[in-house]
Image (tube, rainbow over all chains, first blue to last red):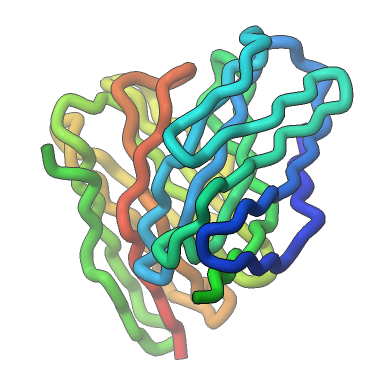
Length: 114
Length: 114
């Protein structure tokens, strides 16, 4: 069974600084996708970034980037120039290529200090 | 365009009562998913609808849970004879198609069973 592990239940960062959230996963599949979702107090689960396993290049979306280490099965999220609005619960998620079920980690609660 | 909408936003019910939760997916999305988010279990897949195909109900925790999708659009998740352990946030997501497409989530319904 596929598992997703987020080892940091909570993280904090100063506004304008950079923070990295960790995620590891376990799979025997070669075709899969990885995601980071953000869930603010409003509960809305918002897609932050998506990575296809076959792509060697790390995905980036503005201030958000990932470090995808396929051999190590690691998928960390880097948030640069942190803003107060980045404060939320962040979930790492995994999906086998043609399957539709997302498997989520337990989440990391990010606090941004002014 | 409009995102995934869910109603009600919050629901408080008494143990033993039935509840219905509604999800309105993004227009044009043929795939619809229900997930449950609880403190103890994290995020769990419940059920998946794709077009006119038979739904994948493999994640439903008991036969008290059922879901339907009318006209390939709106979906209703019904919980009969609610129990306190059913208290959770119920999240709905939709995607253009199943499989490789990214899932976009609604704001969820927080259910509290007293």
